[in-house]
Image 1: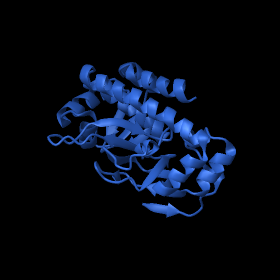
Image 2: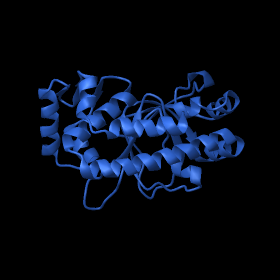
Image 3: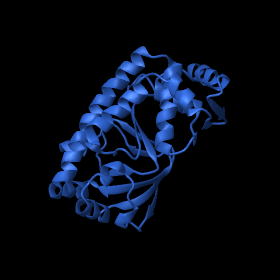
Length: 238
């Protein structure tokens, strides 16, 4: 992880931080470091102590369950709409999930101690993050239903749209192995689903590089969870 000491307040572009009053936001960013997250980097392991929180800007991070008999299942994908280290809001300094960087890019990093001080100083931050926790609970519940009831092709289309939104680009990198782990299916299932989306000319997928060719068509192919989970965020936080 590379660190940039130029942590001046005017560079913010995380939506949680952007929603704060200017004075609160400036104080928080003055106590943050600007870091570059690398794809595949682990920011937290189940049972590990949370030493820092991250507010992604152009990067995005998968939160993955740690079942003993499986590679895991993605619970949520966090980009510039959210944060990593949310248990600290509740006073819990242990993480229950793997936090793995899916999309490389910048983020704001704040020490756990600094974050605790920020919560004590800023009622607006505490209120915003309380609402964010409510969003996470609602979205996680939706993902459980999605995993149980929706087809792999629909879920893959949803995941690609979510990654596009967080990558801020129609092109991003992801392998079949990672997709299989994120969706909780076999690699062959992901391959068939990706081929179906390619045959409809919705995406192009070569050597781990995904290009979304038809965003509207991909949204039509996705399960309804894509629009629903984004609506939860907008209803509670915006």
